[in-house]
Image: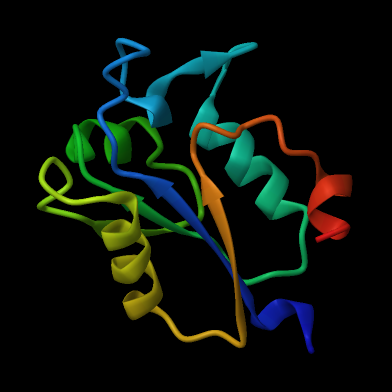
Length: 116
């Protein structure tokens, strides 16, 4: 399979209630979780990632305006489950394969992705 036909889908619709901040906006060493994931994705020979947002969607998109991602909005993020955000992400693009990446996993390394 051609690796450019793999599409990362970043699930970032949740509110992050236990963290006290929307996870996509949470910071780790000066970068948001989403920025870290996008930086790793940019080093892969894959299609640009799809990012499914919900809670504070406009704030998340505005804070990450420079990222090369495809935004998908889950308007029912508060009353649905993560699988519903995944379904929206999958329905938004076609690919031979998908890499599902929860936004609260910003420390996944490039090497780990290559080993998948």
